[in-house]
Length: 258
Length: 225
Image (cartoon, rainbow over all chains, first blue to last red; front, top):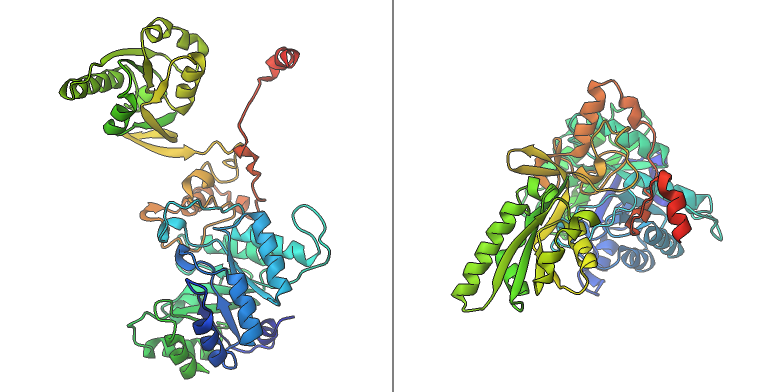
């Protein structure tokens, strides 16, 4: 369906990177980074008001990267800022602009961001948002028919330190049933965390991409080693790199891994 | 029960500053139990306001009244004679009581003495915690008697969000993730099967102003309409 889904289906160990839309109107920096990386990575994940801090609409940023950087984009949509109507319209807008991959997540709570008094939405949870996206693929929403089917390759998040451990499986299996074709984990610190996730019921044939996060001052070496270990271990379907505090360092990681 | 906390003194004093004779009206049920707005607390507030008025050289007179429940018309009638003497009333009841008092005595300005906080329980001496958001679609039978609407900040219905860390909530690392509690409760009672079905998106028409008529009274009220 999408280039990203083809890569996963083909058994490729995928490499994805996270990018935040600007806190302003200039897309130049994001554009340049995406251009320099698009040939080396399997997808650019465009974040959605990450950390509950307002940024440019990820739908517009995703469209821009598709058009100007020829990037394969995964659009993140959170349930925090939109009700089911707004999620539907954003999905339709995303598809109209060429977005083929979605990552549907609950979203960090507003008190973690810079405007803690904002009203959080959570009209849907991430499972219900996946169900909505799966309905769009059938040409309808929760209520009625759309003018045509709108299909995405759907992704969901997967927590790594669930307590009690059995709890992780509850939402994981619901997300699978709701149409998730791949999972992105929260940042992991070791291969054992991915190993544990692959033992979840129904995980055997599921594409689980390990989240790796690099701090601004953190040495890249150990993270690169972990990524290589995950690749050779064969448990993870790929790695997702994020460096939210110093986005330019993503290039440094990609160069060492691609 | 409904839990409330008293408004900051300054806010109450400013709101009451334009009135000469002010009645502080306590409510004897929920807000009395949570030590916020009962007869005793109404008396304390009246005394504080009186002292502040004297210190500020304002000619104000504060009196105290209290009824069993301000959310009940019958009880509100008891306040009639005192309200007739007052230029304004500070109600110490929950938001429902304050409004019902204002509705019952529309010619007298009614001021709020408390902020209503939540529907909760008396967790320990002097501690109340929230338990219900009155969402009109109770899922407690499924979730092991633990409410994911009021105890999960995101109101997640199908399991924990990704922000939980080692069983604690992303909004407060001291607070248990509601879903960890739900899971343990269902696991210990052999009911984890409850969590297999997807719970559908909530119907948010609970945001429309509520009204309910007991079935036995339906004919009576339909006849009036």
